[in-house]
Structure formats: C-alpha cells, structure tokens
Image (cartoon, rainbow, N blue to C red):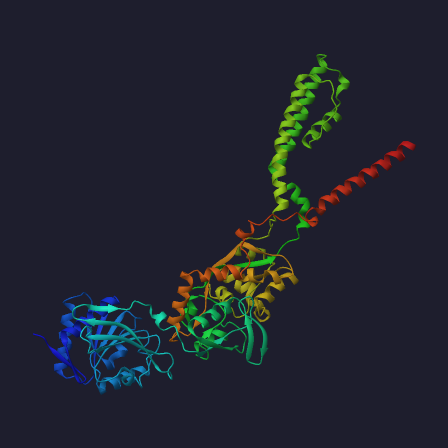
Length: 598
C-alpha cells in the first residue's frame, strides 16, 4: 500500500520521498542518515518516519536514526559525513531552523529539506542564514511531467547577503536522480566582492611592505602575496590588511591566550593570516590550516669559514695521514733498495763507486716523486729497475693527488666544527638564534627530544629578549657577529640569500623537516572554499610554477650551470709559499757567496 505524508500544504508519495533520500545519500556515500522531526511531533508522524527508516534500510546498508530537531547538540558533528533530512516545512520547522542557524550547528553538515510547492525557496529562507560551509539541499515538487522533483542548493555568502541558489539535479520515478557533477567550491567560488580581513607582519621573503602608514599598509609583495592575490582573483573578494600590535607570528602565552597573527585569527579579529605558518600539533588544535603549500627543512645556518685560512692544510687533505706515512716509508724503502743494489754492483765491479753518491740517490728518488728527471748515469739494470718502479708509483700517486686536489679547489667544501645538534651542544661556543615568537622557537621549546630541549634551554632561552625580529635580521647577525648561528627554513634562506652580505652555509645534519601553509579561523565559512582552490592549484601545477618562479635555483639546479672559476683568494696561500721558497733560495745563495769570499 502506498502511504502519503503531508509536507506543508502539499501531499507527496512517501515512497518517492524515501527513494530521493536513498539516491542522495548514496550519491554522497553517507555514513548516517538522521531523520529529523519537530519536537511537537505526534505519534502518527513518528510512525511515518519509522516507515521511511524501514524503506531505506531495506534498500541500502547505512545507519538511520530518528532525532528531534531540538536535539541537534547530541548529533555527532562529523563534517559532511551524515545526511540530515527534514520532511516538513511548516511554521514550526521554519522556526526551529531559524533557531539552529543562529548557532554553528548548520556548518560543515549536509542537509536535505522537502519544501512544499506553494512556498518559494527565497521566502522560506528569508530570515534563515545558511553559511557557505554547509551544503543545504532543497527538494521541491515540480509541475513538469518529466521531472517530479527539482534539487536546489542554497547558501549565503555573508550573513547580510542575498540568498544564492543553483540547480543541482532532478528526480523522477522513471529515471531516478540526475545530478550536475560540479565540485562544491566551484559552484560557490564567487564571494561577490566581500571584504575579508587579513593579518600580516612584514617579513621577507614572504611579505614585503614598502609603505606602511599607521595601520593601513600598502604596496605589499612577496611569496605569500602571490597566493593571496591569485585567490582574490579566483574567488572575487578583497583583503583588508592589519598588523598585530606585537608585530609577531604569535605564540602560546598560556591560559589559552595567543599573541600575534595567531591571536588575531583565533579571536576572530581577522579572517586569515597572510604570512605562511608552520604546521604544528599545538597550533592545529587552536586555529585552522589550509592545505600545505610546501615542505622545507629548517637548518641552523652559520657563516662560512675563510677558505684562505686552511689552504696549506688543503694541500695535504687529498691523502690521509696513513697514506702520507705509507708514501714516506715507500720512498725510504726505494732509497735503501737502490743503495743496497748499488753497493753490491760496486763490490762485483758492475759500476763505478763515483757514479751515484748517497745524497744524489736521495735527491733522485725524491725528485721522481715530485715528477722531476735526472741526468743519465751508468747504472746496472737492477738499479734502473728500482728507478722504473719509483717512476710508476709516483705517476699513480700524482694522478690520484691531482684529481682530488683540483676538485677541492673547484668545489667548495666546508670543514665545520660540528654537523648535528648534539655536536653544537658539545662545542658550546655557538650562540643559536631564532626569530622571536615564531614556530621555530616553539619547536625547540615544546620538543620532546632531550637534545633539542637542551638547545633551547642553553642556547636560545637565555637570549629570548634579544632575538631578531625578522629572518633577514637574523641572517645579517650571522655575518656581523662571531660564533652565531640562526635557525631558518631552507626555503626562507633561498629567498633571502641575495640580501645577505656574507656567505652563509647550513650545518648539514642540524635540521628538522616542516610543512607550511596559511592559517584561517577554524569556524570560518570560507575555509572549505579556500582549501578547494589551493588543491586545484596543486593539481593544475600552479603551486609548482609559483615555487619555481619565486625562489632561487636549488642546489641540484645550480649543478647544471657552468662551473665557477677558482678565485685568487683560494690559491693565494700557494703563491705565498712559492714566493717564500724563492726568497729563502736567494737568502741561502747570499750566505753561500759570503762564505766563499771568506
């Protein structure tokens, strides 16, 4: 038997309503279906809801529950996982919906309401605010023979704005549900020129402000502005900029209080944060994050050591100490072997005793390893074989030494006193700096790693009051002061390296990996829209293009460039050594001439 149920002044077929509910729930892969009824419901209406419950469970496997509209607080708030169905559109239902809309209970939920044919959608929702982050579907009877019900999506861009409507699909008993498959953030991407507030602090390379007048900054640029300008163009909105009083990113001040940009977003003084923020567990519980923009390693950066100070050491660095010792032993063995063969030859009159003195033999062997020749003398074949062996060994050593030595001149390698956070702690002479009230400071402060915790307590915390106010200032301190390191993301350093007056290098293993994005109030109705647009930018390659165009080339990219020439400063010590040798020779010559005159 076909049951009928009055929805307002309209009578509809109960089985059709059940089928519409089933089709929409299946379309969204819904976990739960909540059949909502007004609190005044009499028993016969409740029995009708039970009929729908049995009708749905008989066709698909999903959990269905009957709830009063006044019990919305007891329904789990799982974003867009449930379908909330309202089968009435009378005055009492309208009043309860209006009451629910004044709270946040509509947000991040999916709704389906059956509206009677005598009431227009605009009239029914005239005083009900439907936020952008709720998906509200209206099913209404049609007079068209081919279409029995039309499905319409409704929402408000702003509480004071006009109701926005768009067609989602149609339903008929013969063809079932036909749907317009367009993502939600595409249907709702036009914010109609509304003004959103954004908090920022000037901090290159992400936000660069060339003109700040009071609290009205103008002429902003930088990495973050590339994204926000694009989002403003895509979603048709305008940003109004504000600066926090403490000019900081913000940190947890205790007592559930936050400072800086974070505090302004959490307190809803602004809608979004313009600067990029590091994702951290203690932040994600307080503020909303948009999808990740990029990943980066956060290093400790220090000033590069002067390459000229270790030029002489570099002469010996191609070979290890053990290999140098083996070379000296080899030279000694060759000299002893040559002298033994020479003496045996003299004893058996194979060569004259005056042919090769001990001092000459020593100079000959040493000269061979320095790639020097010597005059031809009459030697036995056994002595010549010793020299031939020395030439072969010297040639192999020369090729090996030259390759390593030339590469050390062409490729700059740092001989750092430490390479990890543990080494920095053991050394104890480096002053580690971080940007004040930043994610980097919070990372060390809240870390469960005992080594990182010790770095904060011993090297960061004592200098909290004098920490730099920007990343650029911190890198400049590394150049101006001795024994200073600064913690900064590799991406940030790439954006600032051209503004740093000295050469700065990273401590190779003193780093941690982080992910950065933009922050938005967790209850903002525009969070889902911005998240969807950023995901579209990622899929279409826009994020990669922005990253490629904005940052300086990475190391693997610079390796493809033509090699740089060796500078005079790099080899200056060798010229000094050459000049010293010449001067010593002249001095010895003068002494010899003086002695001969006497």
